[in-house]
Length: 451
Image (cartoon, rainbow, N blue to C red):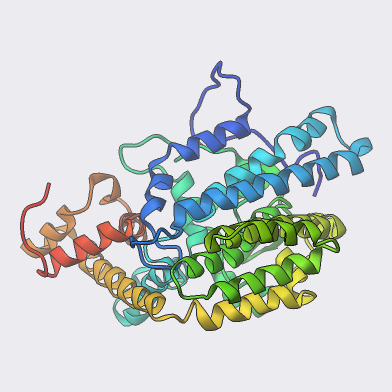
């Protein structure tokens, strides 16, 4: 990829420049902060049940922290690129890397989870499983590629739809972000059918068929390398690695801190795990030891070590990004930055092993995953069956079911695929509480008027 063409201020949709003294990439950040889809992340599960007597992270606080880490990574990477390749860069490119790459990465981090449904990964699983379990009744209504989108429903692909799709009655181009920011969240820049092609080795996918043309525009504008035309697969944008690293750094560490606050992980275990990782990356631990000696509050001690761990991982991720930069630019790197580091870090391996054993399998986590799966599955069943019936064949119950959906999610003039995507827009956009409340009402568990 060309460092001079990998970024652009072209946006989706119609827009005009304002007199406000912000760059296009700062505007991306501000648009996301004020968007309703971002605001809804405050009531979407990260790992632990929400709400509770002890505050833990939700998708919104997680995204804000990832964005903060991403800004640091973007700043350091931008300085490296501007210095290392200054002779190859145009003047506006040097300015971008020094002053705006941090804004791009921060914005992409802010919206990296914006397509994730309620209840975390169990919500994604419920949507994909719904179509898999109803294949005999539904598959014939869709093309092969459309069906692949549905049975492999993916929050990453849904994020591109949330950010670019024009809902009924709303402005064209969705959130109207720059193509650069949109390309920076595409961890899996391919269509769903690529998962079936073994030689491409794609675990997930990055865009639905409905947004394929938009993604092709994004890819062309920022110069993504096309790996395959059929199925359509691109190499990653080089900024994706920074967004991914920021996310990996945060969830590996913050989930542990949350588990400690909830009493799932002991202070001694959490402190030991964090301390070992900090020590593995710092030869002089005198200041760290002095600080820990001063801090008596157990939560504050963990918070201090968490900050030191994140700082160590930011520095390590930056070093690895620089070391592998040639592979990142030509698209040959096939491993996440933090995965590369983990292979040589017993301390990070131990944190991951401990998290799997003690946190992600904890009863409270498993309970919310099971409950969330059932809620999302039943909501889909309530809406998808009626919407796929011809309008003239819908009886009273079918009509009343669809009346519960706001008008922006109805695509009566569209194909069956587009009608179903409208349902998925509605259901996947729900917060945990809204989905649970609606489930209770349509199942008759809770009856009564609420305004």
